[in-house]
Amino acid sequence: MVPAPGRGPARPIPTVIDCDPGHDDAIALLLAVASPFIDLRAVTTTFGNCSVADATRNALRILTLAGATEIPVGRGAAGSLAGTTELGNYVHGKRGLDGPDLAEPGFEVSGLPAVELIERVLADADEPVTLIATGPITNVATLLQRHVADRSRIREIIFMGGSVDRGNHTPTAEFNTYADPEALAVVLGSGLPVRMVGLNLTHQALATPEVVARMRAMDHHVGHVAAEWMGFFGSSYRAIWEFAAPPVHDPCTVAALIRPELIEWRRCFVAVETKGEWTRGTTVVDLHDRYHRPPNADVALTLDVGGYWDLVLGAIDTLGKGR
Ligand code: BDR
Ligand code: CA
Image (cartoon, protein in one colour):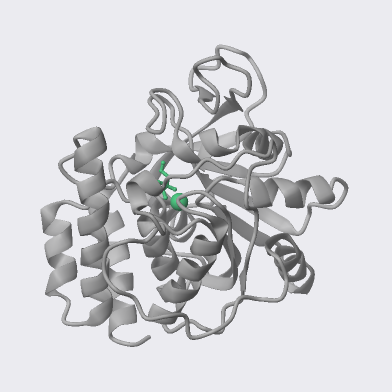
């Protein structure tokens, strides 16, 4: 259930981000690290925008850039539950975060693999933990499959994926949900509170020239790196989808946690196609209750674009000035 509106939670919410960085995943991590409303307990990685090895290296480098080397990073799934490894490196570059040179990681990957690291966080936290997934949702599904009985340690799952209408990786399927639809089916069937942040929402979060100019105008390295990332990401979106500016998808999930009132939500039944000949990985969002099924997700519909960018750019600036 979407939390009540407000300027942010009363105390930091224990959170794990499971990601495949990725230019927009990178901005999501910066937003979470900078936010006083999030207690980022761990970052876990998955295949997706690149191999899991590159995603892990990228996560370590992003947290190093953010000065957050105390956050453990656990390496996760190399492929989907069905054993496939669909990659989005045609969007994010060969190693998943191409563009500006980044310093090598200032710390090592955790000795615990992703799912075990999340289990440790769940066990150690004194309140239920929020899981944010910004890549194929394989690690979260694996965690749920291991804990059929006791899921009370999870407060909610917020994922970037799917759409109420169009796709991107295929005409109808969004990349993350295409990459592991069986995993998303596990999450949607879990009975846990789930929030879906799909393309219909994230395509409103465009890094326009004005947004990128605000990044460049920041007189520090983090702002300039973010602007360069948008340059690389934007050229992919221009070449493949003819977008004038790139949609910065993944930070919308973090914004959903910090400032849910920036987004209009609809509670409804969501399914994911696992069998379609042409539609595998497509989300089916029953906005008008045509199936008469119990709702299983809160679905993001419209974004307060100005509020979103103020939040994201404020976070980048905070990190650049040294938090
Ligand atoms: C999603 O796929 C990746 O390209 C992005 O990181 C985002 O998570 C958008 O379809
Ligand atoms: Ca992603």
